[in-house]
Each structure stands twice: as C-alpha cells, then as structure tokens.
Image (cartoon, rainbow, N blue to C red; front, side, top):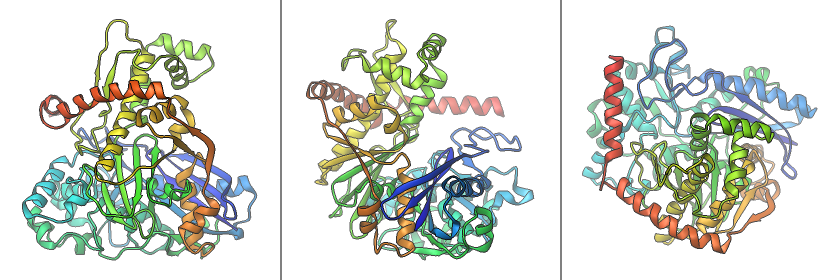
Length: 552
C-alpha cells in the first residue's frame, strides 16, 4: 500500500509517493508556483507596500493537479493502491474566504485588493498589530504569552487578521472564515473545514485547547471581540487523525481514488520530526531551506526566551513540542549570489562547471576558521528567535579592500550557524536538553561546508535526514496513520523514517576558534538586538518614509 505526501513550500510544492512498508520513496514531482511570492505587486499590477508577502491560492490547486498525477505516471502505481494523502505547509500562511471556502481574491470586485489574498509566513507588514498584541497581553497579564517566548510575531495568525481589520475594515467585514492555507487545502480535498492543532497552537495562540478570552480580543479592538466565533472557530483536529475522505471532484483532478483517507494538515517543520526518527525528547530537528525551523520535543513545560511556541502534542503526541527559528538562511545565501557576486566569479564558476553556490562553497571551504576576518548578523529578514523582531536587519563587520566573495559567503553561513547556537543556548539555559542535532531540508543536501560549520559552531554531531524530501515523507507517514496502516506516528516513524549513515562531527580546533567568533557575534547580537543601538530600526523607518514619499 502507498500514500502520498505533499509539501507546500515558499516557492513550490512537491509530492512524494511512498511505499508504507519501509518508507521507500517511489516517485516525486515538484511544481513551481506560477505566481510565486507576490512582494512588489499583484497579478493585476497593483503595487504592494514594503514588507508585504502574498500568495495566490490557485497555485496550491495547481500543485495538486500537476504533482499527484505526475507521481502516479512515473511510478506506474495504480491509483487503487494509494490509500491516503496528507500535506504540510509553511506557517502562518492564512487566507480570507467566504463561508464555503471561496478565497476573497477570487471575487471579481476584490482582485485588486491586497488584503483579499493569502498572507505568506514572511509577510511582515503587520508589525504594528503584533506590537499591540504583545503590549496588551503584558498589560492584562495573559498567561499564554510566556509560552511564545514573551512575544507574538508579525508572521503569526492574529497579527495578520488584525491588520486587515485596522487597515481595511470593509474587507474584514466580508471575511466569513480566516483559515490557514494548510487547512484550506484540506478543505478543498475533503469538502470539510478543519483546523489542525499544530498551526493553531504555534501560530494562533491556542493553549490548553482554547484561544485567549473575548475580553482580550476586545481590548485589542472592540470589533475584534467575537473574532474567534465569527471568523475562525473553536474545533481542532489532532495530528495523524483523518480529516475526511477525498471528494470525487478532487479525485478527478488528481487521478486518485475517491474516498481515500485525507490526514489532518501539519506544518512543514513539525511533520519532519518523525521522518528523521526524532520522536523522542532531546532531538532538535533543523529544517533548513529559505528559512530554518528548529523543532524539539521535551517532557516538561518550560518558558524559553524568544521561542516561537510550546504546545503539548504539537509535534509528537504526549510530549511538549518546542519551536524556534531563523527567518532567513538559504534566502541570505540566495540574496548574496543573486545580487552581490561580481561577473568574474560567475565566469569562474562556469569554467569549473559548477553553479555559483557550489563554486563559492568550494572556495570558502579552503579557508581556516577566522581567516576572512569577518563576523555577520544573520538578520536579513529580521530575527525570529530569540529576539522576535522583524525590524532588525543584516550586518557584516570586518570587511576591507582584500575581502572577496568566498569570504563573505562563508561569513554568512557562519552567521546562520551562530543564530542556531544562540537558540540552542536558550533551551539549555532553561534545562531543556538538546542532545542531538538532525539537519533536514534542501540546504544540507547541497552544502557540505554548511553542515560542517553547524557542527563546529554548535559543538554537536550533526545527523542528516535520509530523504531529500523529508517534510513530504513525514506527511506521507501521517497519511499512513490516518489510513489505519499504523496505529500511531511512533510506529510509522520506526518503519518509514530514515537517516543517512553519515554523521558530521565537530572538529575540535575549529570549535575552539568558533567559540571566540561566537563571543563576538553575541556582543553584536545584544548591542543591536536588545535596544542599546536601534540604528537598524531608524534606517528602516527612513527607508519606508522615502518609499512612501516616492509612491505618494
């Protein structure tokens, strides 16, 4: 018997067809979103302000219609042998819809309205609302706030919905349901609306099975008092459960058999844990791609500085699931390669028959630790953990006329590793052990230097996911549980999860040097990140003023 896991990422969606007996991946297919990330304008040409990041729901339907038939064709597996399907998603990526799930952006009168579209996880234009959510929670002594490291991010669910209310109350009035894109896709597959406990717990402030009080939401804005009952709903579906069965309409679209099990939606990072056999406490899974999510299970409830959230059963049933993260990792390397590497290096990479990333990695790997004389702060897209501040920006210190692109490329990799060490130290400080590291996602597959630097900087051996599509594999495992093939995710992980035999171990001499460099990073981290010098925020404000004047 087979299941299909679909991983909806920032730029594309991919499907993996998996043999449930041992987790063998039979076929995979990737589909790039036609609309991509809309951060400058809508398809109609309507301009977007700074810090916006939107997506189009049709892209997700296109993923279903392209990738699922593709894996069936490639594999030669009969649709009758596929017993379940499941998805994972970036989060929080919520969207406004009508009562029947029609996205508001599908309505002819709203195609030019930015607030009618999906707000991608890295939509940062709701920072003012996030600040209000945090300040009000502190004033009212809300007990749930410490479970999110003391701060709710502009990336989270209610920050984005409150932004719609306060900026376009007429659009807010048209919203019948505000729903995570993950849950919306499940809605399309099954015809039934569900809300998964993972996204609700980590991104929508649900603790102990409920939202904050109506009095709290009213304190944010009087029109927000009934937001949960009017726009969201209070029923939650547990991870691994069956959300419903595939409808005849979606069966025709995908080529699957109507009536197969559709699992409750999940978050991309969290669903990866069982795919790499991380179902026990103390194993931190780093899902490394455009950004990085750090997932860790523990037996006790603790408050950790700047964590994204802790939810009981949010990753593995019965354990407290902790989440932290970095808002940009691969995105930083991509920015540098796309916008700042001179033509001579492009030519050298072509001559070496390597892409530019691989060429810079090769050159940077020849350096001794500290040889480039640089230290960077990895805040090109703000800081998610431990500072929870999207208004922070990147910094590179130590450049001179001898600095070359491989130096900068290596320093940027090191900065992201320092950011991960800062997160690990925050957990250690609260008595939550991080005994093992497991790297998953696209970056560890492509960049051996990155893996070694992360091991050296953190001082911990680094295990590697056994699948290049670990989130999709994890989703397929949850589909197997929903279909009744396995009784729970522990049993599915034992049979279907996989790790590579290779383990990247720290090099002692490198580790000693990185301890010195990390101390410099920490000095800069605290100085620019904790209020001693808010120059980054002042520069960002000047930038926004200049853009507003130019557009106005």
